[in-house]
Image 1 (cartoon, rainbow over the protein chains, first blue to last red):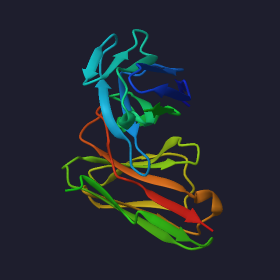
Image 2: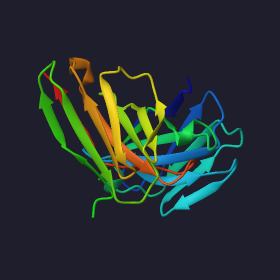
Image 3: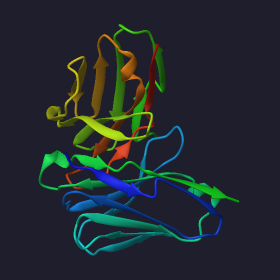
Image 4: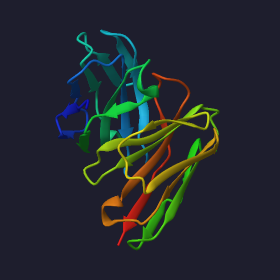
Length: 113
Length: 112
């Protein structure tokens, strides 16, 4: 089946630093999604990407849909303590699989004040 | 007003018991899902319903049976619980294919 690999698996950074993480797939998707999960909560959608090459921002977050359609990237600028959590990428095939999302294995972010 | 609400939040039960988890969404979404998150935080789809119709049924033991009485509700019943069923179960909904999900806050199931 499809597998999504996220890297790095975990990051320990100082408050104020920028963060980059990525997600690669063994197959093509036509929608890429990025979520954040806080402890004890469900994942929350951060950014959705629908076209190869698309670059979309949401506040300090910027995500890109890779041109090969097999990868996506998420950047967080000027990190703050509340950025702590697990970041998941997810891929979808819009017209197949009834909207099923395949999730990556997550990047755990720790921000030191 | 919680968009996707699951009950209970925590469930501790003995092996062999039968239990249910309930999920309701007030977003008017057509599609609902059950995902399982294991101890390594990996999220794996179990089932999906669109307008009360089962459309995704991944390789899940038939001890797990979803039920959707209407498009706002998707419940999960588990028979003969096993230790390996311990996990966090998330309900989610989405408006259309290719759109993101709204997740519930999860049900932490512990089988002892």
